[in-house]
Amino acid sequence: MSLNPHRPWRNITRRPSRKIWVGKVPVGGDAPISVQTMTNTITSDVKATLGQVLRAADVGADIVRVSVPDEDATRALKEICRESPVPIVADIHFHYKRAIEAAEAGAACLRINPGNIGDESRVREVIKAAKDHGCSMRIGVNAGSLEKHLLDKYGEPCPEAMLESGMDHIKILQDNDFHEFKISVKASDVFLAAAAYTALAEATDAPIHLGITEAGGLMAGTVKSAVGLGNLLWAGIGDTIRVSLSADPVEEVKVGYEILKSLGLRTRGVQIISCPSCARQGFDVIKTVDALERRLEHIKTPMSLSIIGCVVNGPGEALMTDIGFTGGGAGSGMVYLAGKQSHRLSNDQMIDEIVRMVEDRAAQIAAEEQAAE
Image (cartoon, rainbow, N blue to C red; front, side):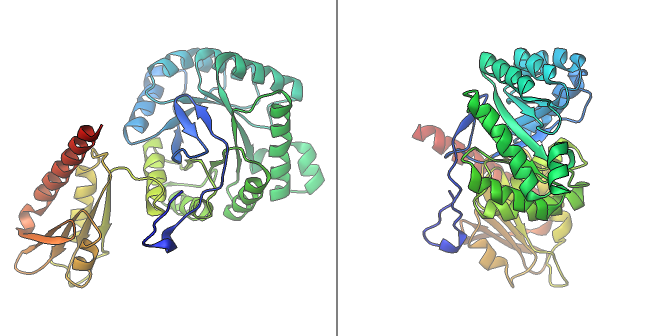
């Protein structure tokens, strides 16, 4: 729940849901909304796959999904799960035996697709493996791979067909006394996904995995995901998210965090508030922000930084941020700390000094938190 008593127009009330565990990561209930991504390497290449997992974890991924299409992949999964700093979800399509092997290999969660996993007897075998090895599961409904009987019934992928697919498989899991599951109803069409997720949120208390599947490349996919996921998150729907981009998985994690940060649902690292720049700017805002984003990537402590080119909005934005810099004249600008004027700073020293101030503030916050423990 995102509550702000002083600014109630910023409040988001999350949909109540059950809490499950994906390894050591809680999903649903009062747990923070977790950020996921998926590797795009050949899974049997342990070095490459684990490298992607580690890079994703380093920028904040809470959970990473890995495709397991064949036996070579499940053999590699054992080492990947053992060495990964975050829980690994095994992505299963068509071959239910891969799910059983993945559970044996140490996967924290098994993703199954109702459209291609097979009949109920196969699902029961997967459930048994999940129970035996302490795995959770995700029912992953996709508009692009719905069951044939549902397409015959409804004529096309639609919210009703996606909801029916998901609820049918929820019943299978619950009939077999398995309750450690989450569910998704993804589509590449934002309207279809939003309608399906809204219906799902009303029909079950299971944790919901949000995603706009096959969203596109870095720019287009980011926009589409921000529109679709942002709309649902704002309505309080969603317990874990994956941004699906035709891009490096690291970029998916970054975009996921930015979506959550924009809604006040998660905070990690430095949030830079910057102007688009214009003829009034007292320094090159665009180049400065680009440099600061790169040089502050290592900061994990939540804090805000305003970089504004002139005094029209600079002082006002600085009131709301931990550290601020507002461009002035004669090659210098004003530094603000906790909303108050601190000192003037020359433009040629600005980037190095701001990086130093952010690092010092992060260290101070860490020391205060340690002392409070």
